[in-house]
Image (cartoon, rainbow, N blue to C red; front, side, top):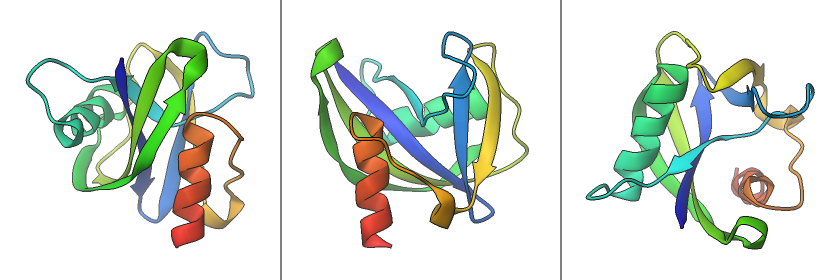
Length: 120
């Protein structure tokens, strides 16, 4: 199942969000399933709008990553967005992190963060 993920940058800071279902200190990228008739770029712009209320201004592919645990493939994008953050019902909270303080994890969307940081 294709999943889109967004490393969302707003005003030079990266937005990490925590889903209500996740442990208290666990934050990640905005993600969602691709919908029928939708390009991956349209899909991640929609997810950023739905989950954070931000408008995507630029969308660039970071890479494609396997997520075997859930039988998914992640299409990860760097999304430059603007607007005021307002979380939807899925998300409990968010953090704004300077890029130099990002610490990638070694699976799933963490690999996209690693690759994005390496290209900066």
